[in-house]
Length: 123
Image (cartoon, rainbow, N blue to C red; front, side, top):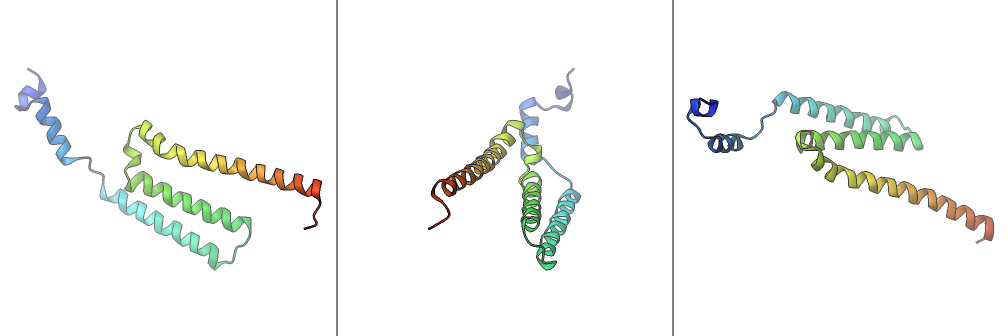
């Protein structure tokens, strides 16, 4: 006798019952992530409060921003529990955009240095 027959439910009924309830995550996980988001936001504000300037400022702000966005997408948008193909479909395009922006920045530096060398610095 199979397990489904012993409980008196067909596999289709069990699948519908599981679909109605959905996936439950512990509330402690959400509280932990909220705490991390609060701490990362506090660190982000501390960068301004301490008066950090230059590349370090922007590096820290972007780092905290990406960490917060990653936590929100992974936990609150449930991407941590999705299939890998869906994760790649959502996260890969922004990563590729960042790679292309970096390539354009390097090309822009080459272009401006070539123009300055050829035409000179005069307006």
